[in-house]
Length: 279
Image 1 (cartoon, helix red, strand yellow):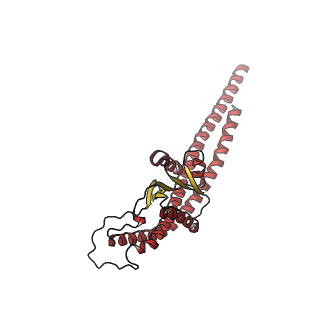
Image 2 (cartoon, helix red, strand yellow):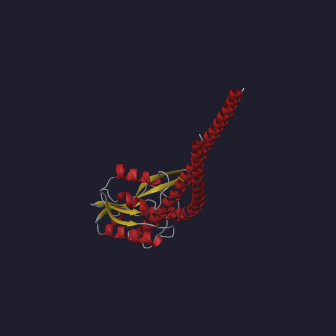
Image 3 (cartoon, helix red, strand yellow):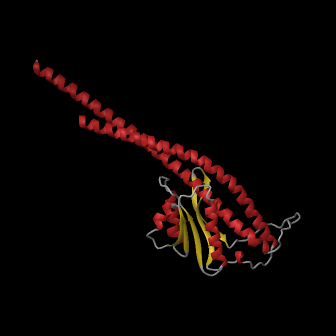
């Protein structure tokens, strides 16, 4: 019985240590989430107005045959965002599931994040580039990824440029999404009742400069959204782990108290039995 109590006490100490670690990681993830969310929201507004500007320009151009607007023959080029670290719940698993069961292995892949690079290493995917340990100030690195993809597109070596990322809805909801950056799709828009904006240079020529800017900006914007989703997922995972540790600790403490009460009862019974035997 004494050995059982010591074992339970050791388990309680182990659970308490684990709880301290998960609680600390939860606080760190909460702090990073707040910071990351601010970066994302600031950039999201810029990306939104850039997309609006591109669509306004496209609505002013009729019957354009610009390469950036035409889907070409060839293979797709997919940029996949994953995390560098683990302990973030089903964040990476959702991306991997969508990649394997819905998107498939057709075309070339660029993997951003160590977890994705490790997962895809022994699978039948053609990975042409991988990047790890990118922080929120990695715009120049992502510009290099975007420019290489744009060059391949201009040479007609790929048919489209796609991004697989995790869309941040709110602090508890985030989902994997596949977005096509190129060719740029023209959205249906209501005809403006006010005076149209005049763009210079006019016609297709403005797309030569604006579309690459658009691709670079959205790539960075989706990266920030993915990092925000990662921290939100990690915060939720660590919060759940902390709650589970507290619940397990309470269960073990109940078992310890029951074992102690049983030992006391047994000792009293033995004492009473001994007294009765002496009478």
